[in-house]
Picture (tube, rainbow, N blue to C red):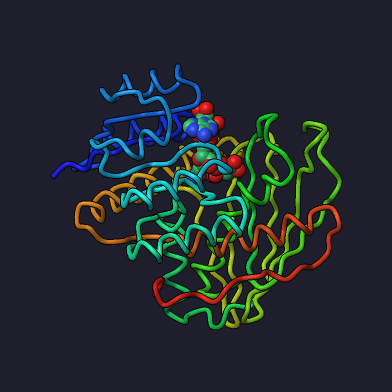
Length: 334
Ligand SMILES: NC(=O)c1ccc[n+]([C@@H]2O[C@H](COP(=O)([O-])OP(=O)(O)OC[C@H]3O[C@@H](n4cnc5c(N)ncnc54)[C@H](O)[C@@H]3O)[C@@H](O)[C@H]2O)c1
Ligand SMILES: O[C@H]1[C@H](O)[C@@H](O)[C@H](O)[C@@H](O)[C@H]1O
């Protein structure tokens, strides 16, 4: 059976995922696309042989759509997820699942009332070979109990529409998910420190930002988010344990030593750095839809991350250490 997918949002990652589904995801076809910019929708739909529908809600309710892929801007995700749950259709949403914990709770409550886990969140780094290898080392106990985690998240540049809170709600969400997943722990407090700003930014943007998190078991995490670092897409992570450390490998490429120099390329964006992880997460999602089961990061994960980003966003400016307000995890989410 082919899973017929309807896509909402035909921007950078929407177009990327549509191409990916056509080229590398077995048993799936994009049949409908909508975007508030109909020209974008038309362009992406024509490449896939799909229909353009007038709105995202039309995609959700279209009888030819078996499953929905949400790749519109973060603050628009919640309404589409609620509509998909209402229609009883599996839905994959790009991160962030939601931009407030209140919206996250609406989604987990609606899903529980529907009786089925329908939402999967695109925390694709859980599919990256390097992060997976880190998780195996941590699980093996080789480096002992984790004590500290150091993370760096740099983008070459960010567009003018990117504002200070997005460093937390759009960018740091990847690391917040990884703290929870790698350490199997919850984040209990957040603090955002605002250092000297780069002059190569837009006036409205606090960039870089330095974030500190604490987990329930007492692990301390530092995260630098710098979205106008100019030189490339640079993602780093190291966990320090009682007996050793484990570090995210450099993305595989040659290191050339010649003429008294060492050189290796710096990747330029997420689409190159995590291409294999994106392939893998969509292949897994489509297989799970076909088999009628839930898979991958769920709406509880999306909500738990939003609870952390709420606290961090409130700390932005004041630099206060703020508690993360998280509900009790229902048995429904295992
Ligand atoms: N996993 C990752 O590493 C990754 C990478 C890039 C983007 N993303 C996420 O994907 C989402 C989209 O990001 P992008 O970079 O493609 O942005 P983008 O601006 O390139 O594209 C977003 C598209 O959504 C459309 N849109 C906005 N509101 C809409 C609505 N209500 N209904 C239908 N269409 C709407 C816009 O017109 C635009 O074409 C964001 O949530 C972003 O955080 C994730
Ligand atoms: O939406 C993108 C995407 O999630 C990238 O992986 C991240 O590096 C960017 O900062 C963010 O804006």
